Length: 261
Length: 303
Image (cartoon, rainbow over all chains, first blue to last red; front, side, top):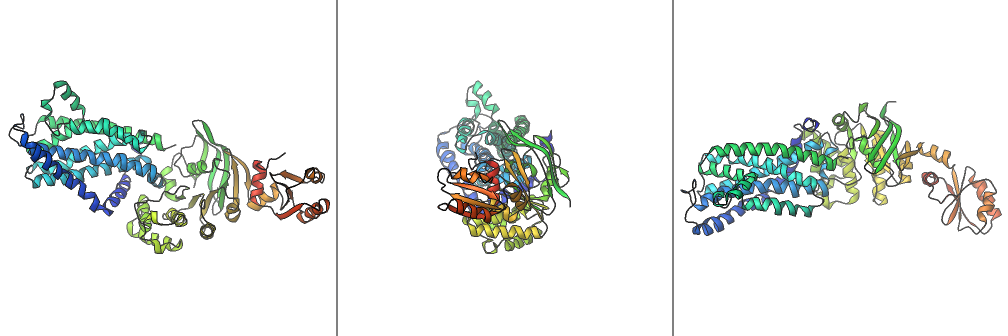
């Protein structure tokens, strides 16, 4: 288990490096996650939503915009870490040689990868929190459940950051990220109970969707925003933690195989 | 004098290539030690093993009296590394690069900032403090990389091709700074494929080729033992000239357009050549490390 032994608080110096860069250009960084959900809410929630007469249980008493809002939080949390730990990490690793510079200091490669994933998860928290504020402002979510959203976003961020890092360890070049985005992220974006309840789909498809981490993130986000909690939130949480642990270990193993030689 | 680095039968194998092939050497405290050789000789691979970022395949490597395959973190804390490839952080300004780098060593912010400003002054970069990395010149980047390597007050400074691709002015500035650091007692390791650079800076050096060390010694000592103090060149020799020269029993080497005569008696040799071959174009000069290198690696189409 030397992979785990080589990880310490020093990962935070890597995290802090990315945080510093983010806040140097914060104006451009905060605007898209703020504006995008507003556009989606207006178009889908209040526009397209007008065509939706009734939602199936347990969401039958909510409007479509109320249903959609937490889905948008889940999506932005997913994209936050996934973009950061694919394109962002790849640019730092491959083009900027930032990882090479850092491992010449007392920081290990394992800590670099951990710091990158922690930063990806932080992006998920920031994005998720921004969208949560937008949705709260539209009166589509309720306190105090919405206060848990950053924690769910953190969990989602660690999961998607670790998964993204596996792809980053494997792709030959930056264009290859089209594949995980097209084959993995886009199907999840559409079929994880984000835009419509999974119960409207055939049972077999529902089973497949349960394997998607975003399904569980969306469920948890929605249940905490609307107060529709169930035992499924606990199972979803456990699933995400186990998935994160496996993917984190795999990401570090594969990244070391790529970079330490 | 203490040994800073001791390598015994140090070997690095990649899948289909032995990059470093059982080399042994010792580097003493306070000296400037050079690894010379053409591209692909194994210089950078050796350096990467010393700086504990490339695991050793076999052999022993001790750095600052610690085992390079065990104490990576403690060793790395005491090293300063200026890599060959520019890996400055393009997302930060010149000053911020140093401060962020210091944080990787766990150096406190206020200490780091003071140290960073001192080093920028030392490397003549103070007026560029707030400029972003993509906007500074290649020579400035190299100086900043060296400044960055000094942020943790290293006991051992590793410079991998510190002047490759720089103009002569920028090279001389860097050479001056390296000499200044040496005077302050810093142990310096340099890799280069410029023989003049090694001759200028190194107390001792090894010449490597194909993963092996060909020779080891001081620059002057290597020149004298391998080629002699002087070289006489006969440019564009006519047919038969080589035989005439060879009849004198001199150490000859055939280049593509000239014949090199290695000798400690260059005045005598030149006069003799000019007497025997009155029409020949003859140049007499001091021998350099470049001659040692060409002699050893046989690029002069040796016969």
